[in-house]
Length: 232
Image 1 (cartoon, rainbow, N blue to C red):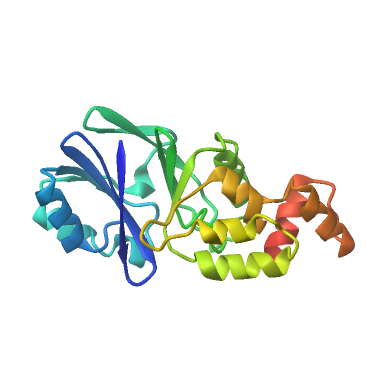
Image 2: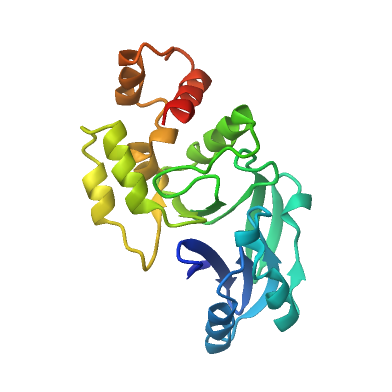
């Protein structure tokens, strides 16, 4: 399955996933760009869906549905580990609540579409108020193979790396992460995230030591995650 990323609203990122001549759109924005690409490459959009139901992620749904014969799949009604056929490939969807209660992530081959749950370099705000659910969602994501590619819902990379450098000024991976960044295609691997993203580094020895220097309980994973989310 091929991933095509579309930037809209300055830093929002939407996606067309396609296999053969069939495609699924996740977080439709930049509708004209999506339709132009599909026309040029003879791709039929068969499914339109979202990572969560915040306005900036659903803004293109209605127009794209008007312009295509695609089926709309409401992310608020997606079951755990539901599959979506895309051409001769399959996309798996699973709940990742935390940013919102309806947040989901999509997985196929060697990549993830994570919306506002896991960004490249940071994580979303916990608008749901359920930090425990957010922790379990991130745990599920980072438990996948380290070479898994991460495609998030916004491009916050430079701001996130500036902040990561404040949190861990001696982290040697941050400069490399910045060097590999391109606004033309915002992507990282889970290995990259585990190296630089403060909010998923709750098991990293350097982060544990960081918390201990602050006299914060660093004995349990969730306690560390909760502390990192609160402090940073």
